[in-house]
Length: 200
Image 1 (cartoon, rainbow, N blue to C red):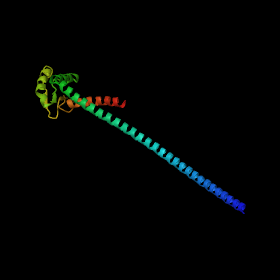
Image 2 (cartoon, one colour; image 1 turned 90 degrees about the vertical axis):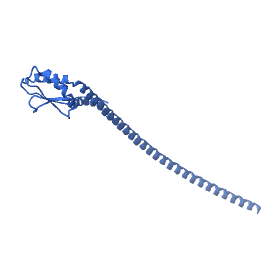
Image 3 (cartoon, rainbow, N blue to C red; image 1 turned 30 degrees about the horizontal axis):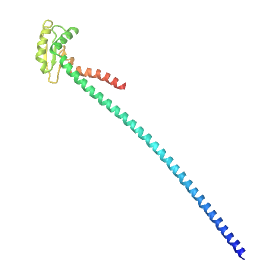
Image 4 (cartoon, rainbow, N blue to C red; image 1 turned 180 degrees about the horizontal axis):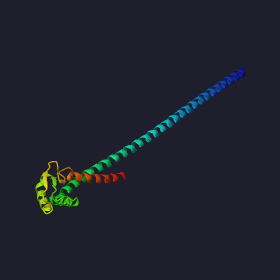
């Protein structure tokens, strides 16, 4: 009887151990499967985050490159405008000095000779108010020998320097005003300045 009881106890013990081992294996297998699923999900999530980060970094790099290019263009444009303004100012100052009464009187004389104005032609000159007295004197001495009629000199408030010259009663005139000369030089300088900046 004791042997049978012992055998029964051993069998119960073995069944319990086997059941416990099976349960343990089942729990471990489920845990491993869950761990694998979590790892796979984490890897998938990490890969998505990396892709998103790469996409964002590319977009940021493109935006930064675009912003840098725009800043470069803005700086070059501001520099060009600043240089053009300074050159215009320099042209105005140099033109004001160059367009002296003596120079303008000599220019009128050369124009009259070059365009074969008859000695009896009426030469009309418009100049800045400030230049009129000196120009009147310079014209008188420059043209007295060649022309019968003294040139007509008019002072124009809108003329800041230089002059306009006409040999046909004002129907056609040559514009040597400071503004006209400056505009021509500004255009010439501007084109050359633009070509310099286009090369950048």
